[in-house]
Length: 45
Image: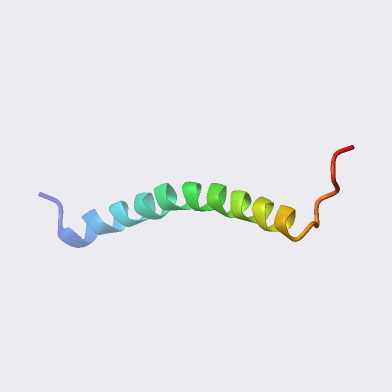
């Protein structure tokens, strides 16, 4: 049986890795929405 410290040492990087991906996607989505609301993006003609 592996020790608890070793288990969490391997577990936590995966939690951060899984949590970062949706965070980056949401950041891009909110950045796009904010830019549209503030009229920073050029309008399509």
